[in-house]
Length: 340
Image 1 (cartoon, rainbow, N blue to C red):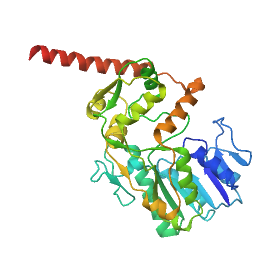
Image 2 (image 1 turned 60 degrees about the horizontal axis):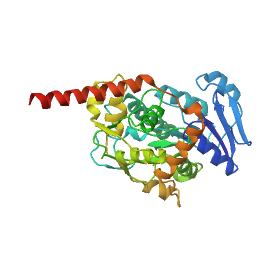
Image 3 (image 1 turned 90 degrees about the vertical axis):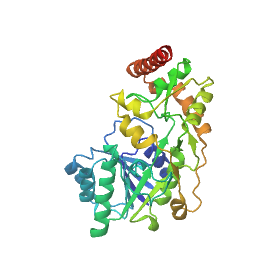
Image 4 (image 1 turned 135 degrees about the vertical axis):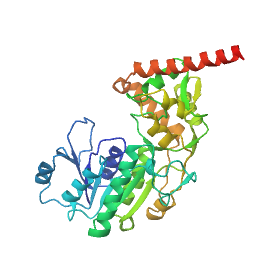
C-alpha cells in the first residue's frame, strides 16, 4: 500500500508516519523540509511547497496512491487545489478537519458524527466546515473518494495540552506551576474535555486508510477518557511534583481582556463540555481502543520537554498578562468587600 502525506511531521501526522512505516506501507511525505525530526528509514520525502501547485504537479507526475492525506488544509481554496492535483490519482483522499466544527454552543454534550456543524465563534472552524462541504460536493458529483477526519485535542511528547496559554505555547504555564504562581483555568474547571495521545489517534487513522467503509464518510478520532479541566491541570501539576495553584476566570472575561483569540479557542471550543461517542470509528476499525490514559501520557510529555530545552519557549508577555489579570480581579474583590 502506498500513501502520500501532505505535511507528515506535525503533532498528529508524525505518529501516523511512524505507524505506517511499521506496517510496511510505502510512505511519501510532501513538505518543505523545514521540520528536522528524525524519520523512519523507509519514508521518502518529496521536498516541495504544496501551495506551489505547478511544481508539485511536476514532482508527482505519473505517481498514484492508495491514500493521500492532507494535514495542512485550512481554507476551501487549498482543497480545490488538492482536487485538481489528486482527482483520479488516489483511491482515497483523507482530510483532517476539526471537532471544533461541531455545533457551538452544544445542544447535547455527547458528540458524534451526526452532530450538526456550526461555529459562529471561530473562523478557523467555519473554514474547516467549508472545506468539508467542498470535498463532499466533489464526492457526490465527481466520485472523489473522500474521508473526513475530525480530531479533537491531540498531543504528543512535544506539547502540553492546555486551555489557556499564550502565543508561544504552553511552557509558560508549566513554568508558572513550577514557580508556585497562580495558573488561570477557564470557567470553574468542571466542564468536560477529552485529551488524545497522538499514538492512539494514529491507530484509528491508519485503520481507516484503504478502508472501503471510510469512503464518503466522516469520522472523529478521540480517546474515550473524559476529564474535567481541573483534573487536566492537576494531572500536569502532579506529574511535575508541585502543588497546583488554580485561578478560575470565566471564558467571557478572558476573551474581553485579551487580544488573544479566546473567543474562538475557548467560547467556540474548549469552554464547552463534550463527550465523544466513537462508535462509528469502532465499527469501521474493529478492535480500535485508545490506551494512553492522560495522567500517564502527560508524564512522558513533561519528561521529554524538561529533557529538551528547545521546547521550553518562554512567553514573558503572557506571564505578565496573567499577573495583571489576576491582580486586577483581586483588587476589585477587595474594593467591593471594603465598600460593601
